[in-house]
Amino acid sequence: MNKPKLWTKDFLIVSAANFFLYFTFYLLMVTITIFASEKFHASPSQAGLASGIFVVGTLIARLFSGRSIDRVGWKKMLYIGFILFLLTTLLYFAVNSLTFLLVNRFLNGAAMGVASTATGTIVAKIIPNARRGEGTGYYALSVTLAAAIGPFLGMFLMQHSSFNMNFIVCLIFLVMSFVAIFFLNVPKIELSQEQLAKMKGFSFHHFFEVKAIPISIIGALVGFGYSSILTFLTSYAKEINLVDVGSFFFIVYAVFTLISRPFTGKWFDQKGENFVMYPSFLFFAVALILLSQVHQGIMLLVVGALVGLGYATFSSSAQAISIKVSPKNRMGLATSTFFIFVDGGVGIGPFILGFFVPLIGYRGLYFSVGIVVFACIFLYYFLHGRKSRQRRSELVELH
Image 1 (tube, rainbow, N blue to C red):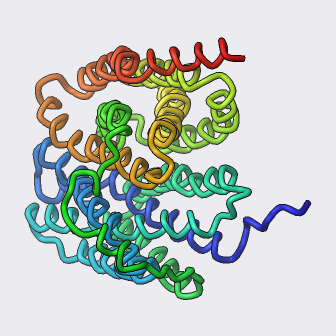
Image 2: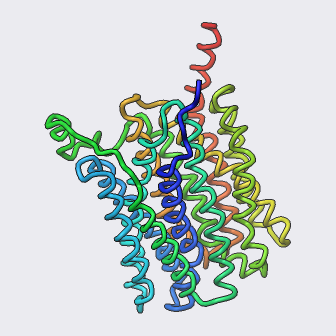
């Protein structure tokens, strides 16, 4: 029997559009702290806020766009998100104060939230049911590759060109993506009056899936830890004279993510989530503690590999857990609940961590965050791990 086609024109367009959204996010996330510090003499906490407030904007926009996308229309939501993202990226050229930068970063993040909600919803419809896991995995690579290429190019351009070149590169790719989405065929959704009525109101259950909240809380703490790398790695690499090597950090991160993902996915299904989750916490905690002690380029790249094995594995596995523990008819809401918490951790992290940089330095910061991630092992055990082990034991006994 022939498998339904996955690599269609529409799948490629929406994956590419998502790649360039996240490419812009990651490129600016790792360079905007330096931009704020050098152009507006921002303190580490203010520079961290300039970086992290983008994610807060994304989080708030996702909260509302996720529940209204069916009413507005998928393609219309994609157009709205992209137009707003292009306009707010263009506004970086006009930024003349720290306040203006903070407001624009928030609006830029909100636009990203609208656009990425649309790409995620559209791709879920485009992928054939028979190839759901495979297609979702390939689509997720658009984010993994963006997480490697964006920071790498951002750090490279920061060394060899002006800050404006970062904004120009982002604009060029976003314009190309915007043109491409005009050729995207999106199925129209017809909603009954009853379905529209159910979408009205502001009940907690309209925004969050309760069963996904325990793993999402852990996601927020681990995302908080990851924000220390996204926001302060460039400044730290500068301080320890490893900027050249530092630009390859995210490339190594992506390579080890790509190598490990097929294995971790199979182990998750065959041996249970605990088999994958406990090592992921350990790898990420060790990576952060090692990062606090880095003196040589090779050690920095080893940390990049461990972050790929740790944080990237945690992220995909925890997302799968949030869906696994939730009712089937609320899978989309479970996913958005998980990412709202993770985005919250990544968004608030730079602002809070920025207060500690003058007190304990970057080395002290990474060591402390490593301890926080290590503590997540015990939190995971109490919130999910022990229940998962009990369920697995019961299944073994039944068979």
